[in-house]
Length: 74
Image (tube, rainbow, N blue to C red; front, side, top):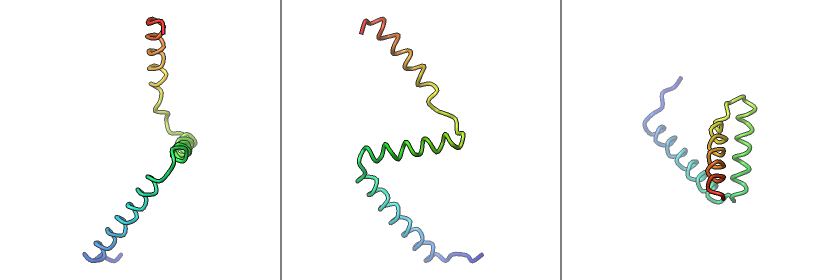
């Protein structure tokens, strides 16, 4: 394995900075529907890998809000 020189490391870092800059710009240009689609793809991918659902508490929060709405007559 070759050791990288300081100049090679600087160039490597600069290339990745440019890649990140382009990636951020592409993300800014995406429509909300495209972002939502990409988020759904990531969510489905996580479920297929068997990752736990982090939204378990959401149902409890919704139930609390529903109880508050009922008591407030809304």
